[in-house]
Amino acid sequence: MADTVARTTLRAQRKAFAALGVRPSGTRHPLVAVAMVLPLAALLVVVFGGWSAVVEQASSVGVMLGR
Image (tube, rainbow, N blue to C red; front, side, top):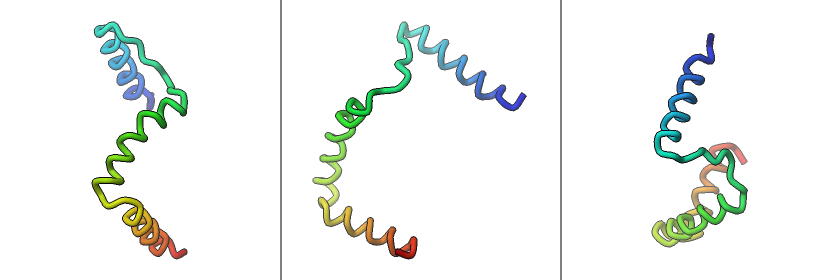
């Protein structure tokens, strides 16, 4: 009974894909996912100040976690 919402949502997604004639692909190969993310990651590094900002944020998180 608790899975009713999840099953209904899944059925709705399947119907939507069927209406468009598209089959859901399931999971992607990890290299495909990396190839999709890298251009955006590179753009964000350039726009938001490069590696120094990443290091600063990581350091802040480490301090918050007590390391």
